[in-house]
Amino acid sequence: MTQKIDRRNLLKSGLMAIGGMTLAPHLSMGAFANTDLSLDPENRIYRSPMVREHFLDKKPDLSKMIRIGANENPYGPPKSAQKAVAESVAGGNRYAWKEMSDLVDKIAKKEGVSKDYIMMGPGSSDLLEKVALVLFMHGGNIVSADPCYMSLVQVAKSVGATWKAVPVTENHSHDLKAMEAAVDKDTKLVYICNPNNPTGAITTGKDLLDFCSRVSEKVPIFVDEAYIELAVGADTESMVGLLQKNKNVIVARTFSKIMGMAGIRVGYIAAQPAFIKQIEKITRGGMGISYTSIAAASAAIDDSEFQVMTRKLNHEAKTYLLANLDKMGYKYIPSYTNFVIFPINMPGKDMLTKLAAKNISCRAFDIQNKPWLRVSIGTMDEMKSFVSALGTIS
Ligand SMILES: Cc1ncc(COP(=O)(O)O)c(C=O)c1O
Image 1 (cartoon, helix red, strand yellow):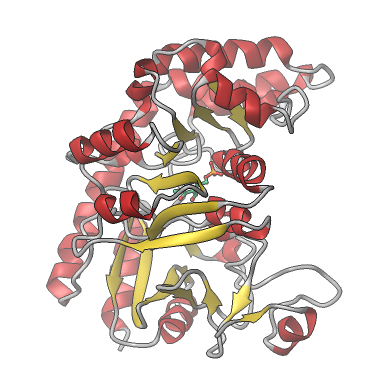
Image 2 (image 1 turned 90 degrees about the vertical axis):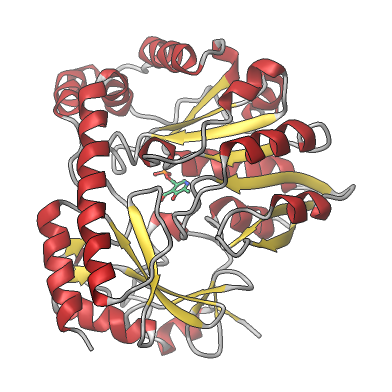
């Protein structure tokens, strides 16, 4: 049983700031911001049949904390993007039609498609939400893994979709067989997050390619590749190549992770032109991205040095963290992202509280009623602080 969060419940559980609309700290974070918020009887946020999330009673002041909760890139924005923002701001009195068109040109070239396959958004969240609104405003069902990243699913549910949640396999991959079996005549979309959030696990490229090729003949497949550039050593690949084979896939990418620009807000989807046209019907000219953000994205996409550096430093800091988790006896899920999730031996809220007392912000989930901690990969110094804090918590 879950209960809807209404105003009284918010006040009761101390989630609402006086006179404001501030939700529980984690509810107000983009990663899981949604419209269908509910608490279960234990005052955890209900995410899915499998997943509940803990939150602190008092909103922490993130500006004073080591922020390893939202899978941000600690090295960004790239200097090249910062310079582009500074130089473009004086042009902010004009609409950035040409600059946007130039950016789409670059992205289309990178993805090996023509411009009509690309739709831009202020972060990929915006596009996940728009796709959900357009496809599900007349109902239908969505098939996805559980656990998975919930933005698209939540918006789909909030406009009336039914969610068919398919538990992940033992090794935390998408259960592609079961997902295919879950598709029926009312299915409007299959959502795949690869690598997945909050697990950090991958679904291997060959299996996913076969699945997307076959199942997209029946229903569009949305593949969220927010972390794919960080999947060092993974046996997987982008599904974007399927577009040239006329497959009905939608691939979402973001500038928030490898490019280090979560607060600058740029993302895109690559999809069949007919699909893009369908989604564009609810927008007006695609001008939701600021002049300065377009300039930043245009610089960042060319800055392969920054991307290589991020990948390397993320890998090094993650390797350090995992070695120390090994030493402390924590059994984590192998991660192909910039975060790691592992079971802990105390209630998630207690862990969050103890870490917050050491100025560290993470995320705590109950997955099938067992407590887990999700830690984003920060700088090496931040990982050292986290490891030493975790070592003293019991
Ligand atoms: C899997 C996944 N998709 C999409 C997003 C949204 O990213 P953004 O809206 O910043 O592009 C996130 C953010 O954490 C994510 O984890």
